Image (cartoon, rainbow, N blue to C red):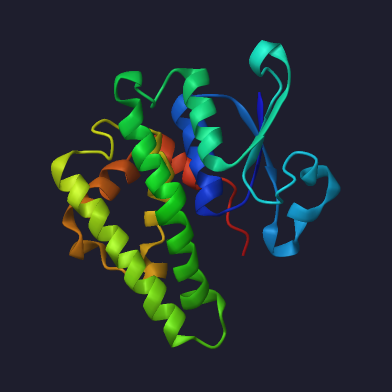
Amino acid sequence: MIDLYTWSTPNGRKVSVMLEECGIPYRVHTVNIGKDEQFKPAFLAINPNNRIPAIVDPQGPGGKPLPLFESGAILIYLAQKAGMFYPQENKYIVLQWLMFQMGGVGPMFGQAHHFMRAKKDEIPYGTERYGNEAKRLYGVLDTRLQQAPYLADEYSIADIATYPWVARHEWHRVELNAYPAVKRWYDTIGARPAVVRGMAVPPVVT
């Protein structure tokens, strides 16, 4: 059973969705980043970069325990472990769109979150800069998804990585109907039972 250290963020939900999709048993350990639990020594021993998510696979390569952080690396590891959602004949296209999420969608949408939601006094420069960049990235996704049903043609870790970020489109002040191919993709993935289960991990604390 894999130990998942996570919180209710897009990056955390990438991994819980993947675990659900692959049917890999896992145990959830909540790391409440609102209470700085990511800085506790026990978690830092797993991820010295103090970010969620992280996993520990007690049956890693060679049968030895493997602690792993960085959500993209975790998705690749789980895909190879399960033999799912990482088609080798198309792996470079999968990696291309996974890196697009890791290097573009995640960081830029995260900045949009910060300037549009986290700051008590809105800073117009930040809102405009990152709001415009978020919309540009939605446009890139829409162009791609007009050409194929999924980012790498078939459903893959690239989609699993990107979906939880698009799920916060309202945080980016983006109307998905303005990007019809993204909306179609979003609705299709959101209807998958494993995605529904994974997106509910861990439950949101109110």
